[in-house]
Length: 598
Image (cartoon, rainbow, N blue to C red; front, side):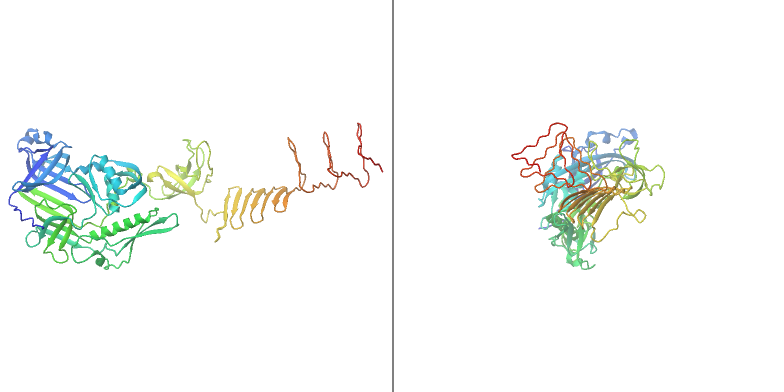
């Protein structure tokens, strides 16, 4: 049964502060304590203590110099009534300061954070393979020596990358993408789904309990549903995951779905160009809709101090009308103890902003070393050789920086660049327009990503609807052309030397500028020349055919060799239509089973 904060008697608030497990010494005069706990934030506490009279005048600052408030000391703060206290904060001292001459007098100010602050220091990089978000979060928390209670997530990622991100920010981002709340309670980092049933045990009635109240119903961020899209590489089409209406705490009489009708949006779409799985898309869509629903009704209520309200529990509101009555989800608790009074303020609902929208979440552009250059930029090639550093860079002018001058040296992206002087070698020409990207958005480190055509620098071909021609044409008209429509590959020089590989004609043709030609086609191989054809070999030349071999000359046919052998398996014939002569400067032999002369 939920109770009023007034039920326990609030006439004698008491406070106990322990440092290193021991109660604070009486000499430390606490004048003010503030504790702030909010979802998705590190809980903090601030103690303000008077410097005993005479310390500052004597320049001793004994309270400050004591070991009680050294940063790193563990601290707990308990509050209650009539010494019946419960812990409202536990953590470590992170900041120690003194203020002299303030409106509070000379004071010692101690600032504390819960132990999850260990996750907030230092940007880190990591790869995670085949893990769920809940496993990754648990692993990160354990690395800093803390415990965690993490609701299990469902999707296992083949790979996920933490790039130069603070662990705390990375945890928040992954939790938020799964519709989980992050807060520190019971000496553990809690990463939980928003509760719909866990009671705080506290009921606040407008007629008797309220010191202040602020509530608002917001329709501008409500949508009927959410659809998440990504690119499916396998199907070469958009993939999508659709949200389901979430179940949230029962407060008020206007649902988020009803409020979504105000602006009339039919669907709210979110997109990523990454190949995100459908199951992950659905989780993302569900988390987006849940975030919106929790932002539909939010506010703050203050009442006399109570240790009962805790993050991710339900606070019963009464007497605020049907728009706000019901079980409010606690997403923040603020305690203030001052001048013998204790006030507690509870935040309910969530702001619509996403944690990942924070500007400091990602690493500063250009590493914060100088003002960055954003997006792609146009450049003009100034020089392609004589890189003084020997890094094979191209000197370019960047018109938006300076249209002329010394320019800047840029690396050139090649489609194939490897070691040992191997790879592709295509450089732009001086004067060419190029497109530049910048490593880490740092204007000192440009990279030429490609070259650009324009009406002034037109391509060597005009595009057709079929996109049938691909080609490489150099500045001196050396050409390699691919005709996809005719299935013809042509390599050609400006002088007319060319090689044609044609599926259309089922042939390979090699031709030079002198009229010499070799053609391989279905009918055979033809070698033709406008002049002589000479065959030479340092070894043998063998000519063989399964059918006839014919040799014909319109003038003389000369055969010469150290030995000339002619052999026929059946008949051998040599004939001259005018004369025939068989002679030798040595012996001449004519042999046969029978020799007939005329």
